[in-house]
Length: 329
Picture 1 (cartoon, helix red, strand yellow):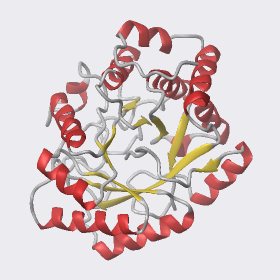
Picture 2 (cartoon, rainbow, N blue to C red):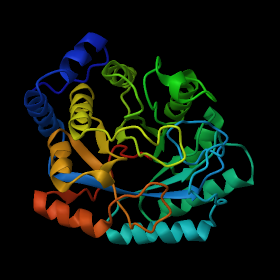
Picture 3 (cartoon, rainbow, N blue to C red):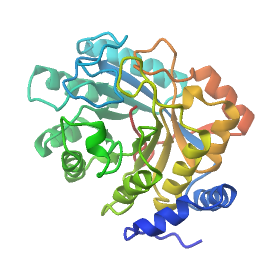
Picture 4 (tube, helix red, strand yellow):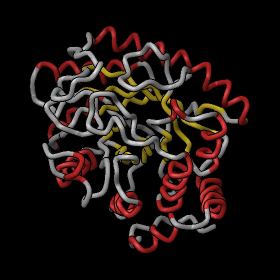
């Protein structure tokens, strides 16, 4: 198979890939995956919410929005020592990537940002790849993070440009693109994907992938999230995303962005081992893992469960540094 990246995909081409008979789609994606990646390796990442809740945005899926009445407790920015201790524990458990999430609309140049910089330096000193998701970011702020040792920045598109206003009114789709561009200019790897199950049409999913696949440089990491239905949010009663929809999204992302790491992200807690195996076959090669008691706002399976699944499927955690695998949920 020819190892060339394309950035000139059309929506019709991606729609045709997405609409293929499922087994043919998975076969094609698995073939691409084996050409570009070692199929037995999966990067294991740990996510820590370093500042939880109280966000002024109105993202319809998110339990951290201050305007929704959810069970998520507001938590101020954690002490740096606590974060470093969590990172060390994650490394000891087998994670090679540590992601820090703060429920902010945007980064502000204040003492909290100074503390984030110290966290990035500390996690980097442990030998872990370090990622952040902190909301909107200026180019100058991105440069500060890069100088501190940040490896990746997550900023998901969430959905298509045309459906975006149905989900979020407090910021525009173009602002998400601006943040991604600022991250790129600073020399930080990009993690950007989206969520399915928001009420969007299949054409919206294809449109979102088109935006990512036609960027001048594909995101190094493309997370595929299934809606985590959080009680108290406007989307709490949306139906569960069918597993075959996740498989289609992962496979289509793998074919159109073959060098990127495709992450099986939110929604995995509701998947059986067999369903996750289909996602790995379709090209997913990164997951979040962690203790159920960690400070995540939506749970992930525990590390021991995942290691048993890896043994059952003949998979192994990626141990070396990657080209930019990271995302948040």
